[in-house]
View 1 (cartoon, rainbow, N blue to C red):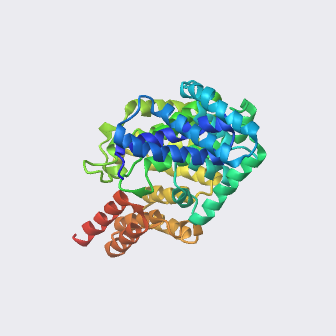
View 2: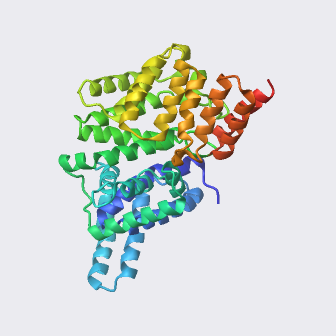
View 3: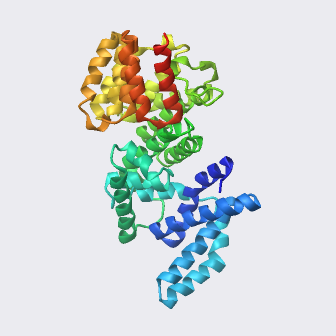
Length: 410
């Protein structure tokens, strides 16, 4: 059975909202997730035959609530719980269906980042429940096997159930305690939306848009937090280039070849204002620095006008705050643009020893680009092909193979 792309996207967008509503009502995370999955499967089948209901979110919540009630009844022989479940069917569902004021997704986000969980487990669970990423996608983001990530997510669900974590928006102090994990989750959701790690589409706009929406909500809750401003700025400044990143056939267009007249100037202006405000507050964080780098790119009218020395300086500071190998990779690119490809290639050589980058296609793709800059076309072709073989993104693979073919035919 095939689902229409627009229906599939709608279900993906609604899933975390529905999960939040069900967890809020029933306080059983693992069972709620199973009930929502059942509701999504039912929707994919019924909506294909009958068309979309007037209130898709309410429809999903009703079906998931009934699945939860069935679960409670079958699991428990206690008459009291069975009676309560029946009452929820009769009385609670209409209230849930029309409850659109409370942002259950934001509450779910903070609940998944509770301090009862380790940071790694909290982030993994939130990416699964709120971001809608598959276990394989999350594992890839963390450079670990899929089975390891599946076990981590399962343990996180069990911890939430055992701890009885309440489903409510935490206080301002609690929000600040959980903020690093929350921001990291939102960053990863946006990153997967901006450049999908798998499949035929380069971008998953539903994920990117939801990450921006949730980050705006966190900013409203904690308006004085510089790193929240920085992350929102980074998302806006990056997302502003979205229309220019793909051609008519969905093919990837690299940054230096994009039509910058199509960039969203309103988003760029908002992002620049946010990061300028954040940096002026004194304390500088990783998201503010990344946003500042994005702003330098966005403010260049042409690729050749890019202030690469400033970008190198910003990456140097960023590397002092983060050991993320992607930061080091991007620093190597910037250094090559300032000091030549040999400098960049020397920096890449250090990343060869980083186990997190061992199977990542971007290391080979960047090396190929720098080798091409250095005039070593044969080695560049080999690296482009290696990179293409390691990525599961079809647009990226096609782009990398096209680069290899261009050099081979030169």
